[in-house]
Length: 361
Image (cartoon, rainbow, N blue to C red; front, side, top):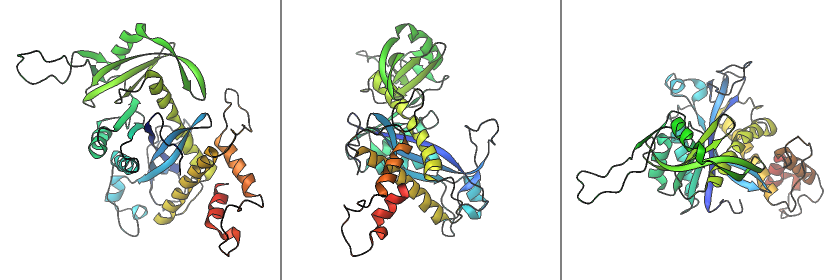
């Protein structure tokens, strides 16, 4: 249903997890989950569900958006071992899966629908490691690539030198040690150039430098891009060496749309307001929330004109998710809303399509 899902010949997937706070003590999947994004007046271990999610990054009417495609409830192993009632599905305790295992399963499932298409997964530094890269490469093949952020203390190496005729021993896997990410950032700062990149809704001037190095944590060559600010820098890396510096910066900047997508699912669509206890009901409700968000973005893709922003904010000119919902709500209230549906001999208000689209509105 998504027209032209590829971006520059590759499938662009955003991967991350989020917490969904609840009140009831018997709500399925809830436990005291550590929240690294908790504010000063919030608990760092809220009673919440933890959900691993994957979405498709796509430019819609001149702006980036994240269309949710798959999600899994992360159930802590300690809660499963303790045989908590709110961890059971149909009276049975599930098998424990780590977030990385859940991510590989979802990526493999989505890659199966796009045979032969390169899959670029954009994630933060927590997911961007060998625990995700190795099993995903084993399941999908060389068409899987990773785009993430480097930690400051990661050690980098130069590319190995070519084998000399008559050289004994096996080929070297790594070249000369270049030092940590911080060391290389200082060395390449003088080589940085100014680039124009579509970032956060508009074209921006950024200062960046890049180099192809060997990354020991992934055991393969990667392209490292340093984006410099006045007194700081950000290090990005990707295993897809065919990407340009501008693409790497733009694609990683688009990753933030999965974060704003979590807010849309929880607050705008209403995933956080549900207090259902039963496992099947909780999973069904989350699936409907994800589907409603995806259908909203699909509706935006098929609009003839670019929607206008109803509530102007300084520095933001592109339309928001709420603007699309407002357009759908107005369309759903028109008398000819069901004109495209076939007459099945039943009232139009009972049609599944009518019901689902009104839920989205």
